[in-house]
Length: 339
Image (cartoon, rainbow, N blue to C red):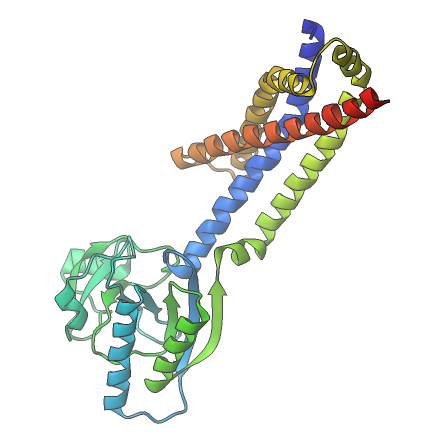
């Protein structure tokens, strides 16, 4: 391929890849924001999660029966390798109850096996909260449950809001609140709901949060993915018209022994500089727009996101270009040879 023709091709590819890079970066940004918002709903619970809004039930349950059902619940969670987070709501205490026998939660200290059966509970104060400042300054924590003493300070999980501390679930009766478990299995969820009913509680709302469903229902992520797909479709049509104008060139080269895979490979490799430069430039433009519109300074994690977006943009643009080459060169070129 002549140098001027290769330069023109790379200019076309770079121009289109720039816009694709912007769309790809925005898609990656929206994915990151969607994942962060999901962590806030599930308190950074690993895996797929179900959120249960639990209230006081109308059924009368004996204290001994409720205690027995609660122990069964803890045993079931241990056997199924599940974790449970209970956050208070409304007029409840500003606390978070945790039962994590297999240390699945990265932010909660690992519990000793004996603590899982203990009737005493120590609280881990969330850093920066009122309770943590009071305890650090005056040695008191007035918002803690009676009989609960501070055991240390930890970082609050995403979505903790005004909650002051977290502590291990003990034999104390569980109260209404938001129950988050790391499963979406209907059988496991129904079994847990049955145990809660035996404890005198009832569900008001059951919300499953599988990752794919959550992303599909996230408006920002869905829109950016749609725009990115439409952008690639439009780009493929534009590149097809450009390659269509070179059909005669491909046919002549084919008559002199050039194979379709050689033509595809040559144009693919020859277009990589334009694809890479345009994609990287588009990602940089996206980062600049986010910083300017949001009036924020990009952090190290933001630059890491942009780096990932740049790699994705180059890969996706290359796949789009190679697919267009295959369709135009192999399909049309072989038809012309048959004619």
